[in-house]
Image (cartoon, rainbow, N blue to C red; front, side, top):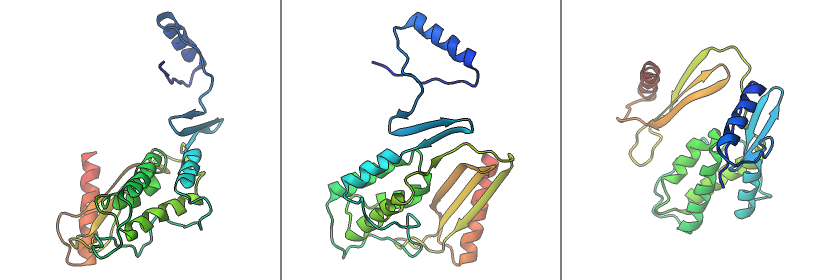
Length: 220
C-alpha cells in the first residue's frame, strides 16, 4: 500500500490530478491531510501550520519527564561541554535513544538543532553532564510543545546575521561561528560550526564569523 500527498492552489488542478491517477492506479481518497509521519498538519485560511506536539508528548512519556519544570532555552549560556572523563558514565543505549528521539523533532523544531547536535557528539561515552544537557532540551520542549512552522506574511526583504563565542569549545579552544539568513520573517538558511583556527580575541572570533557570513551569502 502506497500513500501519496498532493496539493495545489487551484481546485481544478487537484481534480485533474486525481482523475489522471485513478486512470492509472486503483486508489482511494483519504481526505484532507491532518497527520503524516509524526507531523501534525493544520490548514486554515491563513496558511498551513506544521507541528509535532504529539511526538513531543510521546517522548516525555518514554523518558518519564512529563511533569518536569520548564526551561526557557534549550541550552544554558554557561554550558561548555567537554569529554568529562572524571564524570559518571550513564547508560549509552538510553542516551542514544534520547538523542535519536529528539533528532526526529528537528523536522519542525529547528530551534533545538544546535544544542542537540552538540549533545550528540558525546554518544560514544556519555556522562551524567551530557545526559543532563540533553534532558534540558526536553524541559525546554515541555513549555513549547505547540511551536511549529508557519508561513510568513511580511515584506520580502533579505536579512543576514552573524555571531560567535570566544574559545567556546573546551576540547580545542576554538570559537564557534553562527550565521543565519531570513527572507522576511522566515529563516531560509542557517549555519553553525567551529572555526578552522584558534581566535586570539573575542574581536578576532567575531571578524571570522562575519567573513564566513558574507562568503556564504556570495556562494548562495
